[in-house]
Structure formats: structure tokens, C-alpha cells
Length: 311
Image: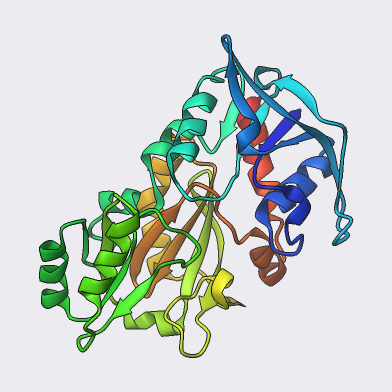
């Protein structure tokens, strides 16, 4: 097949951690033809969805891990699969790219389905499953957030469309910074904030469970660094091997059918203790860590699912 990757610059990725690189590597091993372009090179031109980018070949050699051909101008409708893999922020640039990629159906398969990526932001899709999630409020109004904090005492405050642990604050019962943080966030953004009851189980790790076409294939545990609340690997979280628990499987059974129905082939969910906290559909990570810990080929499972859909 002809495969295009819409992603941030592949030249600068960490080949031992980046999931997009691993997907490209596996696709190449399966003899698919690869093409790379950055989101700002995507366009609508007189009825066609186009991109300016490069044919590419990848190899597992850090610093020399990709060869790119000279830039060419292509019609994405000529490709079998387009991967929507750029990282957030989930802003209007991101949302516009999903609208453009929508127009490729049914000729080209876009993974994950851009319509539902746009309508399933990480911290909003979980609202469909209140029985699985910790107490949560989404609001811009300070009094509403204060009331939630007064009720639950120890809370996590974060931007609704943030990623990678950026802007995540724990406000315990003695904290006096809520009003200042609200002023900070609302001073540069019109977006609401999300506030959740703090889960002490995060000290034992924040589990990333990988689902392929709605089915769980494994998990890694991300343990916060000493003195940290956040467990994201971007901010020093330590990945470790972990098994899927009965609760993890219960959560996956509840959400998996919806993910499969809406074309979300590669999804990473976050579980702290017994609670689902996020459903990551925009640019989930964790493939390489899971493959190393469990000795399985997750990228192969993802491509098998995609190839079956194309067939």
C-alpha cells in the first residue's frame, strides 16, 4: 500500500520511543511505500486534498534514521492510508486538518478516523463513561471550580486541551493558588479548565493501556519521579512492566466497542488505580515500551487491523 504520515518532523524523533517511527518501520518491513509531510503542508486545492512532502525510508540508526526524497506535490486521494499523527496542541490548526482529511473518505483510509478524533478529545470522551472516571468538572467559571475544590479538597487542575503533562497542577487542601492559576490560564486562553479529584494511587503509577481496534493488547506503568505528581514520560515518568488487571479489562470492554465503531484503530487510555482518566486518540504513544516489556509486536497488530480494513 501507499502510506502517508502527517506528523511533526520525523528527522528529530527519538527512534527508541516514538510510536510514529515504529509504525513507519513496521510498514516498511511489510513492503508498504512511505511518504512524510508536516501538517502545515496539507492543503485543499480546487477540490483536491493535497500535500507537499517526501518519500521516505527509515532505519533504526539514531541520527541517521530517515532518508527523504526531494519534496513533491501529491494528491492524498492517491494513497491507501493516511496516518494522522501530529502531536497536540488540539487547536484550530489541528481541528482544520481533521476537516480536510475528512474529505478523503471513502477512497483513502485515515487513521485514526479524523471526524471522531475531532469529536473525541482526550479529556472529553471519558465523560461518556462517568462510572469509570474520578469526579470531574469542566468549567471556565472560577466559582464553579472553587465549589468542586471545596467538595473534594485535593484536586488536579489542568488545561482541557493540554498534553504531555504540561500545565498540570495538584492543589491540596492547604493550597492557596487556585485563583492565581485561574487568572494565569484564562489570561492567555479562552478554553475551559478541567478539574478532577486527586487520586493517591498515582504514586504507584499511571497505567497506559494500548488498544488496537478496540481490543487491549497490553499496558505499561508510568511511575512519577520523586517529588512529582505527573507521570508522563515527557516530564521524567519511569516506564515499567505491568500486567492488565481485571479492572483494566473491564474498562476496555466498556469503551472498546465505541472506539472500534468510530474508527479509532490505535488508542492509548490512562488508568490510575481503578479509574479511567483519559482516552488518547490524537497521537497516542507507548508502542515501543510495551514491545520491549512484553516481547510482542504491537505495530504488527496495528497494521494487521489496517490491512484488514483496506481489504
